[in-house]
Image (cartoon, chains in turn red, purple, orange, green):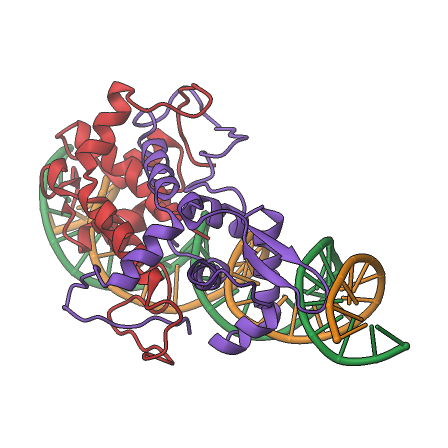
Length: 151
Length: 151
DNA sequence: CTCAATCCGTACCGGATCGGTCCCATATGC
DNA sequence: GCATATGGGACCGATCCGGTACGGATTGAG
């Protein structure tokens, strides 16, 4: 399905939080605040740290903060950090092995789609996402403005 | 995972084929040509027909053809026909029920992303996809131009 | 220097979804 | 009437997701 995993879902919430305040925040703290599964939040934060999107401080009074300004963190990065390499279909990864490399039906329409999706995500920054939401520039089809929380 | 289902994968191949030749083609015929699972191809074509993207002719010498010009068939339509309603996360569908509608962490950054994804797909037409692939305007990261076939 | 808070790495599990197959009914051309 | 097609389901095994858990390492506080 064309759908973000819960990890990314949670990740965006956490990152948005960290983007709006410069203070560090702990996993426990954020999980409690947004009423999200603590273990899962911990794992998400670990992954984001491992990918270099967050930096962590260990020990008491420790926590997480953005490794870079939100304007330099792309959606593509976030997705790849939490879901692994992005590939819309099997044939569009790094190690692509097509069964019939030569005789492709339409000379690869799907690779085009993949590339466009990736470009789109690479250009969409955390700053833009947070900014758009904050200033309410989003117009839903039915004109509603609703808040979001997973579940 | 942020990934197209095989149905959409196959669907794009089939639609590309139908977009390039105006003659009707049968399920059996296309499945054989591209060496794809016949039953699956049949199901995909049924779904696309049900959604009004294809029109079918039953009986001997029957088959499928595009219901409209490829320029008027969007990726969003195709995805929704084969995967059901598009929603990047649970909270962004038609019948959205958030647990905490009021106190959303960042005032809904994810809905923004959803909306952008949808707009992106709604504006990308089958004609563009096929066209780009045919004229080789796609540049992959490593400079390769490879064909695509699922599996 | 001990303890609590916090991150780190990884393994584990039930359930949902996907990819794929199959069957039977209906329609149509030869 | 018979082969060729689509129409509409049900069905099943494998995979992946969402979520949990546990032991270890690091650091600040008292």
